[in-house]
Image 1 (cartoon, rainbow, N blue to C red):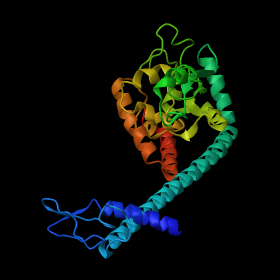
Image 2: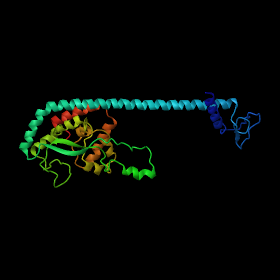
Image 3: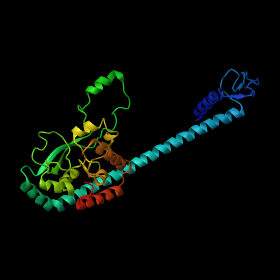
Image 4: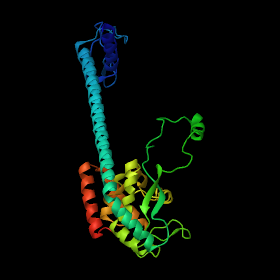
Length: 315
């Protein structure tokens, strides 16, 4: 303890020795006045040669003040770190609770709605040729939110890039989404990836009803049960459109910082995407949801989704 105190006093004395007080002269430890500059005198202690020992009363007070301020600063930093840790811990608890609700509600939904799905499957087969379900690759949660290393060394940059497991940029984890088929068979075989328009000729008769009521999304309860999706969140998009809009639309990739959902704030407030402008507007809803997420907000979005299914509003 004595060695620590002497080190702190020495550190404070060295700091004080650099302070200049204009218009005043402070004596050194040997009784001689310190050499003044043009505008004032510099404070020193010890034997007049800059050696740190003893010191005047004012120097010791300032040294102790410096020590006290440093202790307070360290204490404030520790409190701030504890607050951040508490917030992260509470957020993890809420997200875990959300996952439990996703599992329970998706399992109950699949059990209750299985007869409805069977009836719709029969109607789809009677309406047009092709499979009942439509499977497509979508991009989900991006778990790589930052670089795996906090620093970058030029000498090993190429080597680290070569060892990167993700050889191709997907912006998130790919998964297979399952929907009820609403279009004719091989709808994008000739035209490639394109959005559906309001009077799209590729949509079959029963498919229009399914898209209007959003009932074609019901098989995605299985994706929720598996953990690829959540009940509420930004809608998952195809890799083609993710790569297209990530460089063009500001903050587009941020919507991949949470799990995609069957329904979301953008879905209950707006309809399907059909243009670049629609994407830009829906991004605002997605980011607003991410930045202000709460379980109560999810419940309200699920309630609004029920109204969309009944009335078709938001299409």
